[in-house]
Every structure is written in C-alpha cells, then in structure tokens.
Image 1 (tube, chains in turn brown, red):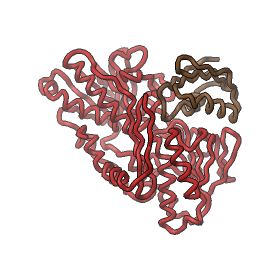
Image 2 (cartoon, helix red, strand yellow):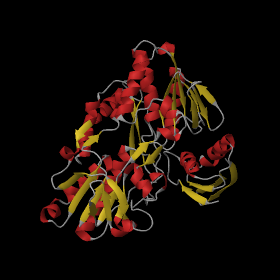
Image 3 (cartoon, one colour):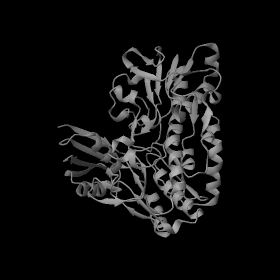
Image 4 (cartoon, chains in turn yellow, cyan):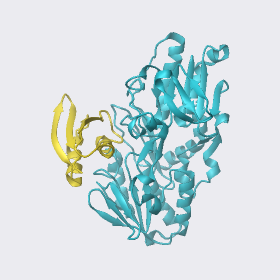
Length: 75
Length: 378
C-alpha cells in the first residue's frame, strides 16, 4: 500500500477531481491518494465522486488555504 | 552549449525558433547549438482535427514541412528518440546514433490510448489522429439518425474538445437537415459538464437550449459492442447508435520507458525543470509534464516562451530570468460560427464570455496564423 500526493494546487483546468481520477487509474487497490487543492469546491466534489464510484474517503482538512483530501482506492 | 530538443510539436517548435532568434549570434559563432529530434518530417496543426472530423477541413490543411518552419541554424533530424540516458547526458535514437547535450528539453507530447477501455477501440469513433478523424467523418456522413453519445476519458489533451465536438455535431446534423432524427448525449467524468466551472456554467444552458442531454460523474469503464451499450465506473449505462470517444491519454512510450508513470514527467511548475535527479539540465514542455494544468497547445506555447527566455539567459549570463505563471489560452468553438475563449493562469481562473461571431473569425484566422506562432513570430 502506497500513499501518493496529487498536487492540484492552482489547478482550474483540468481541476483537482480530474487529477484525482487520473491518479486513481494509476494507483493500486489499497493505495491512498492525498489531493492538495486551493479550490474549495474540491472539498465537496471529490467526496461526491468518491461516494458515487465506491472508493473510500478517509479525511478532509484545510490548512492555510490548501484543502487536503485523503482517499483510498477500494476497487 | 548544446541544447537538445526532443519533439517537434507545438512546444518543441516554438521553443526552438524563439531560442534560435535569441541566440542568433551564439549560433553563428558556434558558442551554442540547437538540435531538434522529431519522429516526423511533418508538423501537424492538431486543432485542425476537430474540423477534419466534421468535414470542414481536408487532411493536407493540417500539415506543413517541419524543416520549413524552423529558423536557419537549428539542426533538425527526423530520428525518434528510443532511450533517455540522463546520467550520461545523452539520448539514443532510432538511427542507432546517440546525441549528447548540455541542456535537454523533453517536448514529446501525449497520445490517445483507445485500448485503455475494453471494447472502445473496436466500437467508438474518435478524432485525435488524421486516420481516426477521417474515419469518423465517413461514419458521420453515413449516419441517418439515432443516438450519438460523446464520452470523455481522463486525462486528455485539448480540454475544450469535448464541448467543441458536441456543438459542431449539433450544427453538422442541423446542416444536413436531420438534427430532429438525432439524439445527442454527452457524458463527462466530473460533476458538471466541463472541468472549468465558468465554462460549465455557460455550456450547460446551451446544451439545454439545443436539446443535448448529458450525464455527469460518468467515467467510461467498458463498451459492450453487441448490445451497443457504454458502461461507466459509477454503475450507469447508456445506449448508443454512434459512439464518439475522447479517450484517456498517456505520454509517449519512450518517456514511460524512462520510468515516468503514465509518460508524465514530474516538472517544477515555475521553472519547468524536471523534478528529482538530473533535473538541473533537463526541462519539460507541453503535454508530457505532470503539471495539473490544461494539456493544450497554448500551454506548450507559453511554457516554450519561458524556457527559451531562460535558456538564452543561461547561455548569455549563466542564470535564468523568469518563472512560468501557468498561463493558458483556449478558444472554444461553440458551433459553426460562434466562439469564445478561456484565459487563465495558476492564480486567476477563467471567465469566458458568451460566444460571438467575432471570436469565431479570430479563431478561423488563427487556424492559419498558427503557422506564424510555430515559427516563433506570433
């Protein structure tokens, strides 16, 4: 199991969620991905996708204007 | 000072020309050399593929001779790189030879991988190569009615293409007088119709107005050709009579072979240097970076300008001078005769205005003016 950082700070296009989806493709089941984003919308749209597709949301926190969203690839 | 540029697409070409102009004295005196390696003797204007797919351009209009676009003094070889040897500051090429460098710029671009989704290559049309775009146009010509589904994979180059192809298809069927016989359905991987929030805010009501249906949070998983059904990771399905895909992309195989996952090279977002070992004299431009920004020609263009300025400064005074600020400029062809654009950087989001005829004419002009950009003039 590995933890990878998806640094999407300053990303408007493609956007943090799309970076995460691409990162998920490359990850193994059980891997954790931590998305860093300066876009507060990601704190909502990442969990929305994680929920719909069936991966695991571990935690979301904000530190100094950067959102950290930690997810685990479940399948 | 030997500067080796691997890749003759937008980024590589604009960089080579811009740099050659800045270093014209040094090239003449032999203090600097610019060497470019490409897999092709032709340069393709990739945005033209959108028009080719709907019968508005012919294949010949997409190409120019690469050599004809390059400033004198640039040493150009059609000799695709087969291996990067960063520790030895050289690359091996298909001819069997190798090229050493003081500075390397990786400008190898990205490619669509239709085989990444089971059933996609066999059952879907696409338009990211000349061959597939022509095949798609022929399929469109033979289409007399039914359900057309446009589906998008991540990551892909040209962020605007999904919207553009959908609007162009709408107008194409309208022109043929069969729009009422066609159901146009659009799917997108995230929770809105485009990754840029302001673009999605503009595009969604346009879709509603034009009777284009859509499903968001839809990531393609596989295609069942027998049942003509596209299935998503999220568990939903959609039937199609004609499936048009923008598949997930990867970087070039030679870059994957060098150990960069997916072919995406870890790149410093400001200096555009390769991150990690050997980054000191290796720069990266265009689609092949791992930067979380649009894989667009304009991105490659603005990055190339920064790299050229910095490399020239290093040759002349030993230090770089400028950071890349994330600038991207993308036209959005919103139909046969309307267009708008999105301009943004790392700190300022885009705010596209409603499409107009004027911007359409600008884009149409740019389709030809592009060749001046490639030559580093615009």
